[in-house]
Amino acid sequence: MGTFFGHLVPGLALASLGLWHTINTIHLYFLKGSNKFILRFWYPLKSPLLRKLEYLELILVFSFSIFAILVQILDFQHFHFSFELDNIEHATMFLPLVIFTSFTFLSELTNLSPNMIGVSGILVASIFGQELFLLHYHSTDHVGLEGHYHWLMQLIVCVSLLASLCATASPSSFPAALILSISVAFQGCWFINMGFMLWVPDFFPRGCGTQAMNPNSSSMHGAVVCGTHEADSRARALANLQFCWIFSSILVLTVSVCMCFGRLRRQRKQSAEYEQLDPIAAVGFKQIQL
Image (cartoon, rainbow, N blue to C red; front, top):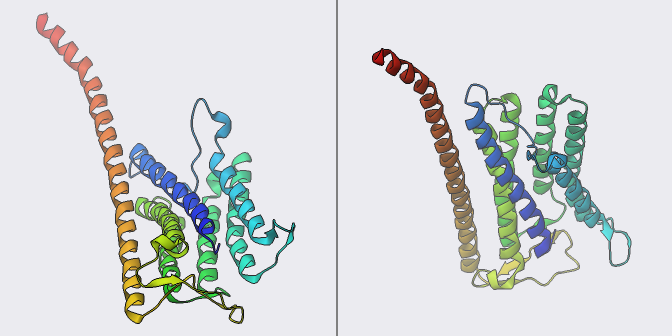
């Protein structure tokens, strides 16, 4: 993952998945209402033209996870396995995703999914728990500005872990389900931001540049180093601002989706009430004529 595309591709995948879950969670809440809402840890693609792609989310997540694992443990240039410790750690982060998608797909095919929501929740929590564990106890110690970006990433993953545990314990909790979806989208956006800020020279903060890799210090890694303490402090402050700006942007998008679905539900409710009142009004009009 120590490249621009190593951050961009997983980031886009996570951001898309989080956005898909955020929209569907809000839609399900306004469709079912607060009393009948039960969260889902995956959402089928419901379309009369694409019935065969109902399990598209599970298939895509499973395929991407397998691909990500292979990319980490295979050296495609020389066509042999490369068992570098940090690569194995990155590959291991995707292993719980493979387990979750496989279990969920099999439970759907065997019609056991309604009774397995608790198990699915535990598997989802294990995804974020293992990710947080491996990020915190990474064999490659990220230092400097990159270490600060990774520390902020751990905050987001921690929120995902807590939200998944709350959602598992209370499947009818709309806030827990929404926070879980938002945090996944936030993870993806932050991955993308890290890719640009740490691996594209045009986006490096002022006073910071690329660090020459030291072969004698394999346990320490920093893609960007700042020349002075003032430049480092300014770069960290900029990272904090980016964190807040991205989070605020996701909140604005979430609120906008809520407003759209809320308005649609109100219009449908008013239309249904009008249809119920219309026959009554017609009968009353006939009685007056008589």
